[in-house]
Image (tube, rainbow, N blue to C red; front, side, top):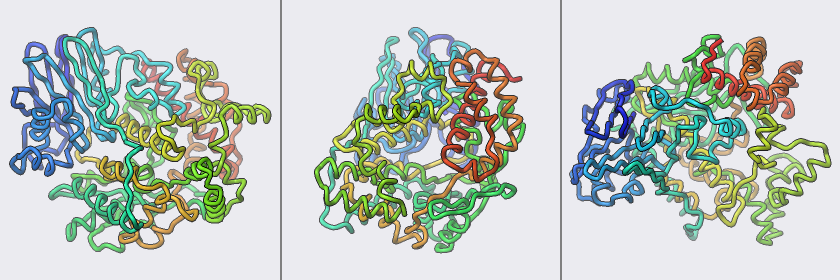
Length: 624
């Protein structure tokens, strides 16, 4: 992790593991390596450039061979040395040439100039606070909050935006007024007290790749996938890979196994809490992915599968420092990532060096593409639009009317949507599906539709894809602190910018054709996954025991609500009366709770709202 302070008292915050420092009359830079990192390769992360500049890099670069060839470097140089050379040769353009999960700091003492940069996909976070002419930056918000000159005042507007899952739309801000985030794909420079932030990478929706045959797109994607996984695998050591019953994590896991033969790849699958009743599976959802995961693993002798069970919450989880409580940002739901602690324990037992995930696949390789339907209609392709609409309805076993939300509804102007909802007496979406206080929601001028996607291209499908791409990378960076203290590296091959650039550039009908969603990923992964996984239309339902756990914690939730009602800030941010209404009108059973109109308020109004209130109280210093 990185810590930088310019001016002021240059106070060293607490670090862990092996720590390296640089000081002069103006600057203090420090890096703490992850626990266990030094057992693999002892090295000093501080590098000097040709002009004497000091560079620290936290993370990994995945295109070192290409950079070494370009800059005529000797083999075997660490990432920090390669990055230092890139800055020597390319200056401010250097980060655009780096592919990896990284945050870096470069200090030029002779020019009194600091440069900060983070990777394009949110693999590492970097946060900063400007205090007059001085600057304090760190890998986590917690490190900044430990500094006596960093104010801890919460930003009410950002709390509201986080509550409605739109915090990424103000990507430079955090829930603390004085603390800013350097968004993915951005650089920051400081010189003479002036700060400049710029974007060095953004996806290009205008780029086009055209081949003659579908098979050529598939082969090109397979090569990029192999490359994205290979560069994230350690030369030796232990690899643990998330493995669900879906395409993304399964594709990553088996690709890693193919590349590491005969070395073992461990896989881990989260299973529901064994003591909780589950809803019945359907043709649309399944709730335990273990059977599918074992079938994936059975195809490769070097995959060792492991299963862990979601851990039900306890009183200790709610205490300061517990698994549901932190000071970085509010938890996104009442029971976030229920299998996370069990997976972390397994990684620790295995002494994993790298943990692979399938994160990011839904906007790259496995984009489902069904919002290309309204694009067809807007282009006047009535026959193609009608054919695909009918085919999608058949595959989804729904009526054409039920599929209107993807077939033509996105073309309806928002004012008409608002009028229609008003005639039916329905509230705005942000009031219907969140616990935000109405006065705060109106002050933020929240769009009435949750799918109000800003136009970045000429197509609805591409606009949505770019929106979710930015949202995903922002959220990964914002939550990167969750793995900051682990002894292993978490790596997500499907966020590789080379793969993303390719997937954005190929024709949209590769992703959706003949009513088949995620068509491209199914074809790409057909050479390495069993047909059951490739052809699966149902989706895995994460945390299916949610209602059982909420019912068990109902008395705690009522007490937590009463504590939130004592906080003036919580009363301004949250509609506490609405949260109480949801909590008091408890569903009779799991069947009733599983109805969408009941489930959404329970999850979003009650669950997410209480976590927001709890976060506010903790920051305010109330632990009662």
